[in-house]
Image 1 (cartoon, rainbow, N blue to C red):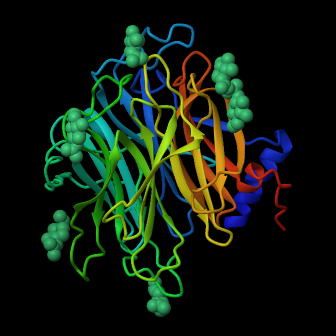
Image 2 (cartoon, protein in one colour; image 1 turned 45 degrees about the vertical axis):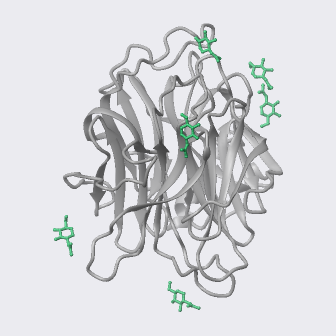
Length: 399
Ligand SMILES: *[C@@H]1O[C@H](CO)[C@@H](O)[C@H](O)[C@H]1NC(C)=O
Ligand SMILES: *[C@@H]1O[C@H](CO)[C@@H](O)[C@H](O)[C@H]1NC(C)=O
Ligand SMILES: *[C@@H]1O[C@H](CO)[C@@H](O)[C@H](O)[C@H]1NC(C)=O
Ligand SMILES: *[C@@H]1O[C@H](CO)[C@@H](O)[C@H](O)[C@H]1NC(C)=O
Ligand SMILES: *[C@@H]1O[C@H](CO)[C@@H](O)[C@H](O)[C@H]1NC(C)=O
Ligand SMILES: *[C@H]1O[C@@H](CO)[C@H](O)[C@@H](O)[C@@H]1NC(C)=O
């Protein structure tokens, strides 16, 4: 049934255009909010045909600055609104009506799916502590939240927040010859700060460090517990994680790709761990991954996801322009995120934050992105993208 869905999708895209279409999932003023920002995307079944798309609703008059006057109309720190969500049961072709997960003043949030218990975990930053919501029915209903009661050690104690986008579940078959011993661990990208993580978005953030909130696979009949583990380099804030293929046996290897809030912004930061994100031991700036630095903002939220293992393919999504949040591009790495030899522009206009999810057997990915003509956040759209389109190979024919 999977291939039927994909056949329909590819017939539609072949009939109309060879490029994937963007379909709007959240549009200001058509629902509860005059502004939607900060989308996230997640698959919630083993077949990877069921999806959740989230966005933050904000009661602000201006969601993002108009292109012609970037210093004007920047959204204020009042982010009162809530977290909205839509579900798809057909690989992102159609979406059910929006439902409210939380109302109130929120900021960042991270979601992950635990395949072993069919549970979605949502970490949501509110004005009070980070809240953990769970859903055991793929987002139809959500638990009453419980506060996340753990903090990293000093100097990071207390100033924490989820990053924006998805977390990952460590899988077993990426360690050489044997299973990764930490398979089943959940890793959530977080922000750990030893001071304010809001120094003014256009400046650098010396107190910002990307970090990882981790949950080891619990024993049977035990609930998950959470603890802080690896901390990335100074000046990183929002990040996403990918498990990489390792020639060791033992703990998983983890790649972190993060927003650059340093005094030399403009290219993405990375960090690598060889012990399941307990510690990051390799750090750097990836000069091939540009992120815009505008008058109002330093960098953006970008996404990384593993598409496949054989061949190894990791996708990076984000706007590829050094001064304007625009030119939204998908890039592929075949060497665990060291180089990105393939790229293709998905949307050349104004565009900003994004998230990605891999569909089905990995022939397609779903991408959610902020985009528009007046501003980079006129709407939030999803595109279903054949990996062969990014690679400029002829579209796979499905028989
Ligand atoms: C930060 O933004 C303000 C207003 O847009 C601008 O005047 C200032 O020069 C910017 N600072 C930096 C370091 O870019
Ligand atoms: C790896 O884990 C799977 C279950 O996820 C299990 O079936 C398999 O036997 C394990 N293989 C090794 C070599 O431990
Ligand atoms: C697990 O969590 C549920 C819901 O919060 C709770 O009812 C249950 O008692 C917990 N189980 C254990 C073993 O702690
Ligand atoms: C858009 O991005 C592509 C690569 O992704 C780059 O070659 C091109 O110069 C960019 N164009 C603009 C206008 O930013
Ligand atoms: C970025 O986009 C602007 C506006 O479209 C364009 O003028 C500029 O050449 C682009 N810069 C790069 C480096 O592609
Ligand atoms: C966090 O604070 C900044 C200043 O705001 C310092 O520059 C950092 O060295 C410090 N980081 C740690 C790990 O203490």
